[in-house]
Image (cartoon, rainbow over all chains, first blue to last red; front, top):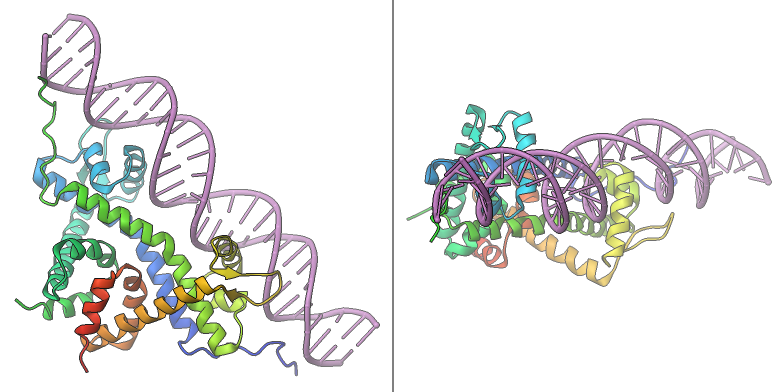
Length: 147
Length: 147
DNA sequence: TACACAGTGTAGCATTGGCTACACTTTGAG
DNA sequence: CTCAAAGTGTAGCCAATGCTACACTGTGTA
């Protein structure tokens, strides 16, 4: 029998769970962009009647070039419908995702506000947090939002 | 005077703030990797005496190739000290970051657990959330963690 | 001491998501 | 109807982060 040259890892947190969590987080990150875009498109459509590339760029804090390329991917993935020089529309799939995101965003912000966090900080943190909140946690946050 | 062809965006949420939040989130994402790595290295060093590439790979859920390349970047940025075929060490800067991350992680998990979230889900969500929690929010979470 | 094998390193490819620079379309003012 | 400016699209660059395939090191065991 061969003694392994270095002892196997006996971790405090099991590596498998840790790795799974991180893989999950990376998967989420892949869809964060989609979520940010569809949410912005939904908001702009509601507030202005249509979503245009420049507005998205301003809203998302990137150049119109990045918006353009990302929209191409989102179209490929079935979230939006784009035609050259035309307004941007959400597909039914995209609309559904947008509504989920808006809901999650509202819940997270309301919760943070109810902890006494300022409006600005709450918005800032929510933007980062909202994509990583599981349904269970979202429900718990909603339950624990008082006032 | 020229009337603008299309009316300027009058957003519900001001675009500037929105864009700033998202830019902030992107900046955070750039350092998430660093945080995950230094935290893992600190944990492994504590539990096994040393951190090796394979262990990190297992722990982070990526191949050893990715670990290797990322370590090169982290060394470039001053978080770790690496020599070929040797164990991986944190610099003082890296160690400080690791400790902050571990603290944030503990606070977030404890808070989620105190909301009644299960251990597994709490760990999963914390992994995604912890990188996006501002000091203000972290303090608020700690304050509102009861039992 | 030799060597098998686990661990480590490197080459090269793909995708995502930033950017600048430049070209093309659309549209409203005149 | 014209045309300049705003908006949109494209080419090409860079960095980060995945991967597979293959090469090299180091070390305990036989």
